[in-house]
Amino acid sequence: MSESRLARIGRDQLSTWLPALMMMLFALGTWWLVRSAPKFPTDGAAAVVSKEPDYFMNQFRVRDFDATGRLTSDLTGVEGHHFPVTDTLEVKDPHMRSVDDDGRVTVATALRGVSNGDGSEIQLFGNAVIVREATKRPDGTAVPRMEFRGEYLHAFVNEDRVSSDKPVELLRGADRFVGDQLDYDNRTGVAVLKGRVRGMLQPAK
View 1: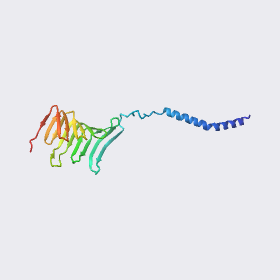
View 2: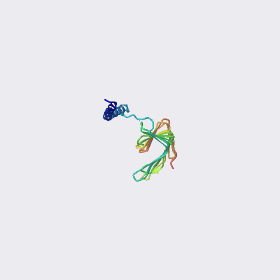
View 3: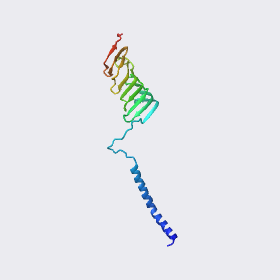
């Protein structure tokens, strides 16, 4: 058999088996990729959540409005970082202003603030101040201005409550109180101070 015929037969055989060979190589490559790919958690396995922030903001402002378009809260900060592992938002130099259904304005400031995922709990650290401006109830009764000061304040928004396990100064109108711990419930108007408590009451007009 001549060399030219052998070469022609070889080319014919190669052209016949080349598609099958390419398919086999493709299958092997696919199998290798599947084996080498990172394993994702199954439905029963908990996903690993990073402890690093998943997003951040600089010089930001966030506003909330109700269904009627009325401004209910206004938050500004120098920096903001969201941590997915705890679902918390940490804000540097926060300044928050909110207005309740009765029109009473509350302003909160601190060196650092931490809010949980749904905003129902806000913790203020360093030169923390919460001010609730004076207002009147529907029956005309005057509600004096309230101011809380301390290195740490914990506000429970849904419960309308402020607490602290650190020394706190409470100003109610012209009256002044200090204590080592505080638990104030705005719904009942009762403030509980513990530890070394001192107070200064101004005479009623």
